[in-house]
Amino acid sequence: MGVIQLLRLRTGILVLVAVVFMAAQAFAEPIQLDWDKAWKLALERSEQVASARDEIAKADHQIGEAYSAAMPTVDVTGVMQHYFMLPEMIMILPGALMGSGDSTSGPPPDIRLKTKRGTENTANASIDINQPLYTGGKLGIALELAKIYSEISKLGLKVTWEELRLALVRIFYGALLTEEYMAVSNEAITQAERHYRQAQNLFDQGMVSEYDLIRANVAVANLRPQVLEAETARDMAYKGLLHMIGMDIDSEVELTGNLEITPENLLDYDAAVKAAMSNRDEFTQLGLQAEMYEGQYKIEKHSTLWPNVILNMKYETMAQADDMNISKYEFLGGFGGSLIVQIPLFDGFASKHKAETALINKRSVYRQRELLERGVKIQVFEAQGNYRKATERLKAARETLSQATRGSEIAEVRYKEGVGTQLELLDSELQVNNSKVNVLQAQYDLRVAEATFRRAMGSGVGSD
Image: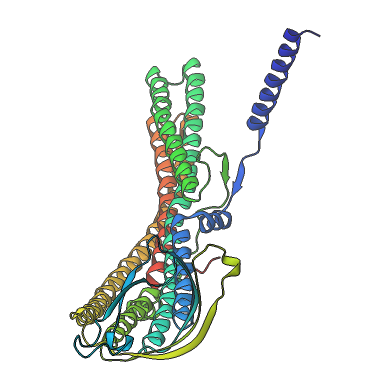
């Protein structure tokens, strides 16, 4: 087999593989996606949840960092020093030590000697151990602050879950709503096409006028853009949902579920507000933040005039020589310890300003709590009102749909018997379609209102 034949065979195999792959993609079953699976994917892949979990991890490391401040530090130092030119020193020997001299000349003069100091090489090694014994109580406060920050981070994750759930309710059931819209639009155009064929038969038999036939055809033409709009809205909603749960936006998915929800009896306003004040994690977070700023204030107040006591233990060994034969150096060592007491007296008022800043931040937290209380009351009031209105709209929409369906059935019978007009028939069908859309919208609004009220109440969603 020649080279060209081999290349052709290889190309043919690659083409065959590509065709098989494309066929497999074309006939692949779409991914079934219900609420539980969408929620699980959102929790696993949400950037906001990942960031909240990172904050918890950081808080855990801060606790470890606070513990480490109470542990000893160990430093090993090694120094090899070489003099290219040894330092010199002058030594003076008193002349009187050299003899008494004669009586006429007096004592002999002093002798000045110039000599080099030290050796060319000095090797030094030491081990320092420092153990804090007391730091003005700051270590204990720092540890408590780290634990508080850890609790704040965990509450932040719960709040992120609740916000994510509300957002997912809107987009998941919004995608279901567009799917239902498209089904209603397709049903409407199918029905309009059926009526057009019916009008064509009646026109051929001379039972209806050309005007009725034209009107039936126009009704079909008017519905086609609505179907296209419904398809576009569904595709966009699906891509938005896939983006939110971290899937490829071009993935083929099939949503399972429905918009149906059973209305519940809500708490009255006062009871709902009271429950929200107890359940909302944001209030607990703000309380913990106030504790953190109080702790920071105490730390800064303990930064001056409070003693720091440190125990130091040190082992040191040293050798000196004029050559580089380190293996023959004679190292001489020593071991000792010291108790160090430091009392910070003045730091340029830095601690004073930091302490005042902590108090200002604490007052700011209290103002944030007041704002949150007012905001929660508004959220509960609005969510409660929207829930009740959505419940009433759904009830009214279902009653209207029932009546519109009955009217359409009557209009169709009248038209077939020749006693009704096509205008009457088309109008009744339009009323049915509009009523179906109103029911779907009311169901979606109730879903969102229920999730919004649940978020306002702060009942928590956990990680389910």
